[in-house]
Image (cartoon, rainbow, N blue to C red):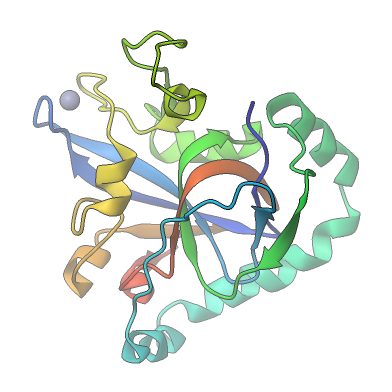
Length: 225
Ligand SMILES: [Zn+2]
C-alpha cells in the first residue's frame, strides 16, 4: 500500500549520466524534484525520521537569481493557477496508483527544493516524463528475501521505483544516489552539480516516497532547461 505523502502544483525532472557499479557502463539516471511551495504529509501516529540535509550556502542562493531562478519561479506561478482544470482526471490517476494519504496528519508547506527518492507510487504521466530521460527507470521488486521473512518489516520489502543500468539492467541503490556525497544527485561541488540537468514541468504532482532530500547543496548550480 502506497500513500501519497508529497504533492506540489509543479515539479521538475532531474537527469544525469551515472556509472553502473555492476558493469561499468555509463547510463542515464533520473529523479524527481519538488520546488518551493510543495507540501509534505506528516502523519501524527507514526512520526518518521525524514532524511534531510540542510545545505547550500547563502552565496549559492544568490547566484541562482542569475541562473535559472526565473525558470523555477515561472513554473511554480503557472502551476498554481491550473488547479481548476483537470482536477477530476487527476483524482482518477491517483486512485489507480496510490492510496489517498488522508489519515491522521497534516500537510505542511516546504519553502525549499527537495529530491524525492525510494518512490513508491508515481502517477503515470509523471512516469512517462521520467522515461523520456531514462527508459530503464522501473519498479525494483523486493529482492530474494521472501515477503514474510521474520524480522523484515513490510516497509523494507516494499517495491519501489529505481534507476536501472541501460546496458546490464542492474539496479541503482537510492541510498547511494541520494545519500552518498558525490554519488549522483548529491553533488559536493559546483562542477558536479553542473552535470545534473533540471527540467521544470508545469503540472501538478502527487507521489508517495520514502526518501526526501531537502535543500540539496549546490542545487542552484544544476543546469536548467
Ligand atoms: Zn550495468
